[in-house]
Image 1 (cartoon, one colour):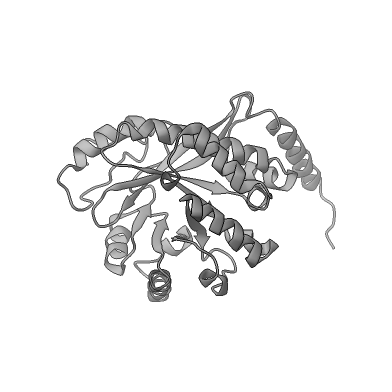
Image 2 (cartoon, one colour):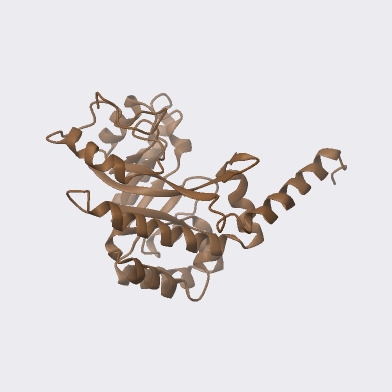
Length: 292
């Protein structure tokens, strides 16, 4: 039982207002995409950019994703929004391939509602064909909630996507109630460790043991390990020592609206290097630092 407070009414009205305004936000060009880089922890090579939705409201300003994405999911708007994001991200990825000396993937988050649709695989196929992006350059990131409709159904959809050549990663692993039993039943090729494990990775033995176990589990199942939320050099050094494959975080680069503009300069700076000497991107602006 909860007693009513005026604040409860305000929250309901705010949510209803945001849902109404979100319905036309994409058409009005208010919801854009930013891309956060992910790097190989050993070679320092740029591996991919993750596409992240950002809503800039003309009156309310920047609305954080953790505020509007849940509303989109609860209202069902996430299906149309997710399709729009996937198509725009694939188009952008095609554009940046011409600037890079080797192929660079794009990672796109997929909501459970979007994934559960019967025509999802056809939708992905159509977008890849229309944009011309190679399936091998697309990585779809799924949370554990995609299996709520059933492991067998999720496995069939995922196998069809893998047959296309699309990569699949399990996102935010370790956040909430993670279940290990389905990892061997679903064809993931990468496991993305949640940022919450990075907070005390270098100071708390129990956290380090947990991360070591997750990395070992993933590798034994034939999966790469991506760690998100890397914010300092000590974390990066330890992740390299523990055997993580790829990393993402503010130490390496904040999300940027124009990933293509960073690629040429990035590869100039990294030429001949084999490790991360300093942060690659300026944390305040998303630009490459002069001493990187």
